[in-house]
Length: 370
Image (tube, rainbow, N blue to C red; front, side):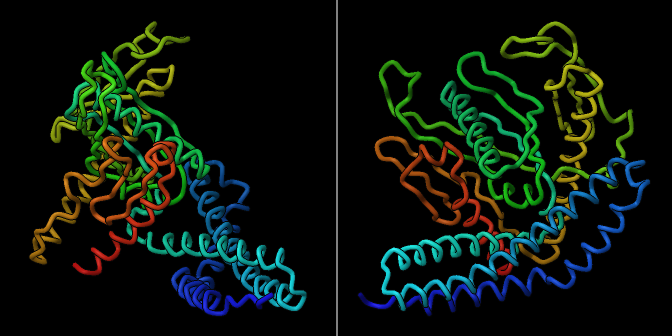
C-alpha cells in the first residue's frame, strides 16, 4: 500500500492558520480577556444589566476564539502524527481517518479565515433582519416566507438565537413582511452580505395553468444598536399607533391592542412589533429596531459622503443579488460572487455557509479595490 502524502495540503493549512493568528492578534486578545474577567468579577457589575451583558458576551466570544485557535493548532499537530502512524502501520483505515481529519480542518480553517475578514465597524454586532415581498403577487409573498424560514433554519443550525419581532401575513399565501433579531456575535457581519433583492423562478403553484412565474423579495439587514450609543429620538419626531395583533390565532392574539407601530416622521421609517403580549414590551422592541435602522441610515449617509469625496460613485450592491431557479432547471446563484449550487432545497433549508463566505470575501475584495 502506497504511503499517504499530505505534506503540501498541511503546509498550505499551516500558512493560512499563521495568517489568521496574526490577524486575530492572540496576545492582544488574551490581554482583553484578562481585563474582561476583572470586570466580570466585580460583584456590582449586574447593577447595570446592559453593561454586564455586554461584558460577559465579549468575554465569552473572546474565550471561544482562543479555544478554537488552540484546538486547531493541536489538531494540526495530531494530524501529522496520524499520517506517520498510518504509513508506518500500512493501515488503510487510519489513512482514511487522516483524510477525513484533513477535510474537517480545511473546513474549520476556512471558516476562521472568513471570520477574520469581519472587521468592519459594526460587523461584530447582532443583526436585525427584515424581509419584504416584492413584485409577483402570491408567489412573492410565498417567496418571502420561504426566505424567512431559510434564515431561521440557518440561525438554528449555527446556534444563533432568534427573536421574531413582527410578521405581516398576506391575504393569500405567505407574508408581506417580517422582522427578526439574530442575537449572536458577528451576526451582522455575516448576514449583511444577504442584503438586497432576491429573485425566484419556478412553476407557480398559484397559477391554474402552471406557468413559470418570476417573483421578488427584498432583504434588509441592519446592526442592532447598543444601549450605550442609542440614538436620541425626540417624541416630536415619532408617531406611535397601537393595534391588535394579526396572524394565526392563539392566546392573547387579536384580543387586546398590544401591537405597536412607530413612525419616524423625518425619515418616514416605520417599525412594527407584535411579538410580545405587552404593549410596553412591544414598544421597547420597536424603538430598539427603529434606533438600529436610523443608525444604519446614518452609516450609509456617511459612506455615501466618503465615496463622493473619493470620487467613487459605483453602487456596492446590485438590485438583484441572487437568483433561485426551480424550473426549468435547479440552481441557486449569487450574481455578485458567481457562487452557485444545484440544490435549492438544501439552500432553502438553511445551507447558506457557502454563499455567506463567498459574499464576505467578495465584499472585502471590493473594499480593497476601491
